[in-house]
Image 1 (cartoon, rainbow over the protein chains, first blue to last red):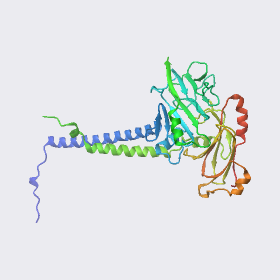
Image 2 (cartoon, rainbow over the protein chains, first blue to last red; image 1 turned 90 degrees about the vertical axis):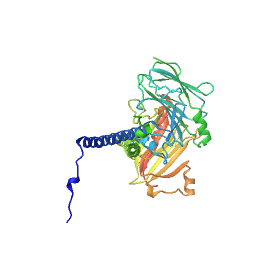
Image 3 (cartoon, each protein chain N blue to C red; image 1 turned 180 degrees about the vertical axis):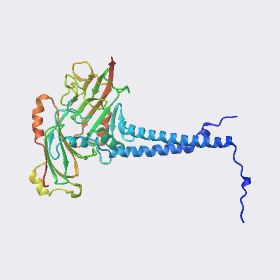
Image 4 (tube, rainbow over the protein chains, first blue to last red; image 1 turned 60 degrees about the horizontal axis):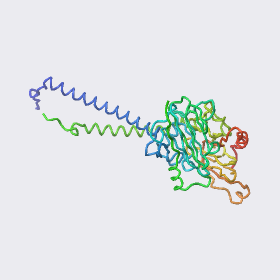
Amino acid sequence: MASIDIESYEPPPHATLARSVAGILLRAIGLILTIMLAVAVGIWSSRYMVSRGSPLSADMYGPWQHWRDVGREAADPYTKAHIASTGKLRIASDSAGIFEARTDTFGARLHSSCDYVIEGSNMAGLWWSLAVFDARGHLIANDANRYAFTADTVAPNPNGSFIVTLGRDARPGNWLPTSGAGRLVLVFTVLDPATGISNAARLARFKSLPVIRREGCS
Amino acid sequence: MKPKPLWQRIDWRLMLIFVLVAAIVHLVETFLAVNDQRGAAYARLARALPHNTMTIANLVTPEHQPLPFLAPDARYAFCPFETSDAPMRVRALLPDLGWTIGIYAPDGTNVYFAAASADRETTIDLSIVPADDRFLGLPAEKLGQTGLDNEQTIAAPKGLIVVRAPDKGAPYRAQAESILAKATCVPGRV
């Protein structure tokens, strides 16, 4: 007949038991905090890469951001999510170049409290437009009803280049009012020629995007 | 007692769990955003505009801005379409530089795009059929008869047609609008 030697069992002292329970609790709390932090980082990083872009989906040319595969069937998930979540209607990147700037050429955030000069080179027969929006993509109401300049409406320099100024107060020339919009976003669109464009010509265009220079802030 | 170096104090199992959970949540969140089309341009316009009809939108102003970041550099005509009942026939004239026509899938993919050239006007004649009925082209003799520049067939079950007329300023708006008004999208036979 089998017997159990119950006398050999010695309960652990209270201090050891308390230490074990505390250790388990601490580990559980550490695990829960780690998972919560990981969830937050996962959501934040996804939203940031979708809304602001990253080198995986967008290229920077000075202050101008260009979503590489926008409008293309083979666009990456970040680009597709960006278009879906922002409600933008964009021409595919193999038919036009669409560039967004949130900073000036020196990296400072575009803001309606500052005046800017935007200098662009001769676009040689291409149709282009430059429009200013607030940070949420809304047009900025102004008495002049002026929200954009295009190849048709800008007053160019004699050599075909152009200068557009951005500011709250009226100026002579190609002035785009910014009122009290706060943070600004510039959108520069260049349509490809109807006959298409070579990759080399497209890259050359990327290198000659307008320069955004801050003149002063009030 | 000498303290342990930093790499020995890190709980590598927790670190691994952190990286794995963050990566999985990142991927799930991104793909949820891809599939959430409620705020996409097509969904916004399809809610507001009649389907299978070309509608000329008001001049884009702060009061009439149907989509965020929609440039006010052009007049737009929109046609949300569905080809489930019948194929769509799309016709548009692109008279000058800056005029374009684009066909977008609901997710914003450009399934077709054409821009006018500076030296001649372009006539667009398109047929849009459901994906499984894709028609691979018209016979050469028929193309010769029509004399149109761009007679093509595109496969898309639903989407958005956008004709864009560059805004050259008030004196040119009536003319641009009259050309834009001739753009059509009608259900009909291919």
